[in-house]
Length: 302
Ligand SMILES: [Zn+2]
Image (cartoon, rainbow, N blue to C red; front, side, top):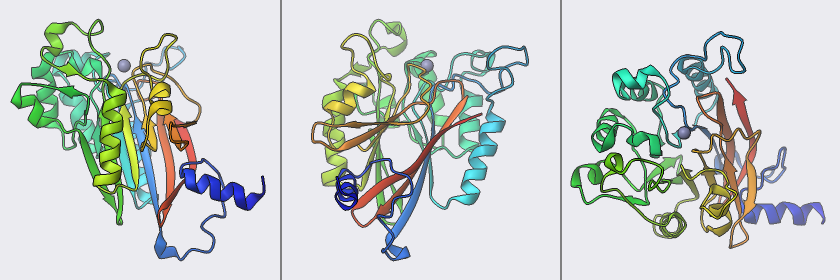
């Protein structure tokens, strides 16, 4: 394939990960907007680094180190969005003693822009989840759970749209099926709906109704399974109108994001950054008119 054809094909796909592309070389600076998306998943109450005990993760991670890195990125990049894909809590005594208060305060200080809900975020029941949401300065996005309880229904949102210098970034959340995974007394009347159908409905609404230039799914479905359970890889292949899936739940340490093709032959990027805040995912996306391109991506060790 000739270079020109190759470039225009990836531009149509929109999310081809290509370093050093000359696609935007002739555009005026004002037409170009750069967005840096950074993300975590399954931090599981890891406020402090792992203990210095000679184990594999000794001295790694911790909120202070993550915060420093995020602040450094914010100092060099104008447009930054920070997301988490669920399971904020459970795993250290910080959760057992303070019920998620410490984790949410730290996320507020780091200026998270949105998160989705993981199965462990129900570990103190719906009341515990509501207390976390009430403390957060950022929305909890979930499109495939519903409650007939007005309190929690009104405190969550299906999606959020961020305006980045006129570029509209639509973000929505997807949760895992909790039956058999979470005691039903914890999730109570939470109704789970098919994530693929819901994702396609929400993403299409974001793209066509709200005219979003880029659609991000915060998913707690898991990266992939040996059986036919819905995962991020299944979702990516069956989806339409999603550009980026930031995953969680399976604690998968991906070296770099993966690019899949959806059912409309468009590229979908899938990424997940392990657990416990040991990695921070970073994707730099350039928007030019109606095109966008992920120009670099890395999962940074902490
Ligand atoms: Zn988890």
